[in-house]
Amino acid sequence: MSRLKSGYVKVMTTHALSALDVTAILEWATQERTLPAFFSFLRESGARIASLGTPTGALYEWGTVFREVDPYPRRARTDFLIPAFSLFAVDKNRPSDPLLLHQLSALQTLPAEEYLFVNVIAPIVTCYFEMLLTCALQFECNAQNVLLGFDPCGAISTVLFRDFESVDKDVSLADDLKLGVVFTSPFKCVHRELYNYSIKHSFMYDFKLGEYILSPIIGAVPEEAACASPSA
Image 1 (cartoon, helix red, strand yellow):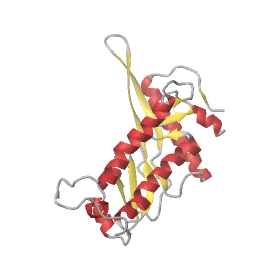
Image 2 (cartoon, one colour; image 1 turned 90 degrees about the vertical axis):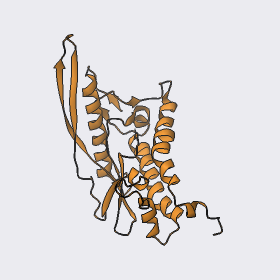
Image 3 (tube, helix red, strand yellow; image 1 turned 180 degrees about the horizontal axis):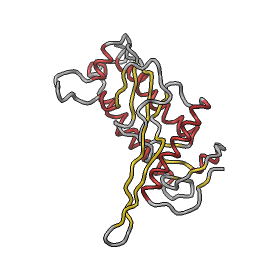
Image 4 (cartoon, helix red, strand yellow; image 1 turned 135 degrees about the horizontal axis):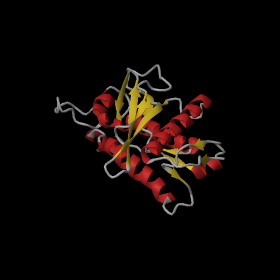
């Protein structure tokens, strides 16, 4: 049964321990091969927290989480790895260049919208829901903590996730799945008794994933593809 360890821990400590919780669960899921073959992440394997005194006598915590730089597990076919925003961002040094998504699409025999769905949208959404439905973890997405890896031909090889402090840990779902996990930190734990339980899930999916990643990527589909008729 999933549960919280008892005892009081301070704010920065709970944040750091939550990131370690998520890393441990994803390591287990990777070893059990319950996640998609192209799923990868950057492990957050340790932290250091300093508790500092203030003039008022209250304690102020400052700390850091140590994040590894090598993807786990490593995908041998990955030729380059980029944050999601690189697909639709303008190159400040060469603003007249086509968007990277347009450049990748131009290399393909697939129509641009089909290439986008198969190699970007579907892999991201698949990994997102597999983390939730097999690990009870709902990732807080933005366009810099989701990275995409491609092989030399521009086909997707990796969907990589990083920055685990803000991942929601669904205690109720973990119990349903009989994961048997122990959350060392209460931070970002959600359960069905919360009045805003459904709102939290909607916020993570509809707003974070939808507005921060999916909408701008879809909006960057080359105009000629977006305007093409279904029979074209």
